[in-house]
Picture 1: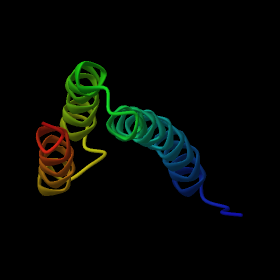
Picture 2: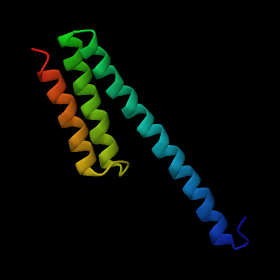
Picture 3: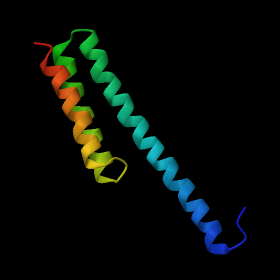
Picture 4: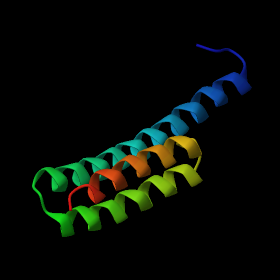
Length: 87
């Protein structure tokens, strides 16, 4: 454990930020799973609505700095491709 006051604060702040990032990433993963579950169930309407929700969650996570913009673009692109292939 750190002895210096600023180092102790950094440990606390880093823990807080890590918890926030973990919660945001978990929400994004859940949204992505819902999209792929709808694709597996062959429900095009549910897949499209889940895609919109997942895209929104990914964009918000990117705006907050949890994901790099290329990572989020790749995730959205792959989901969109999978939903569009359902036709």
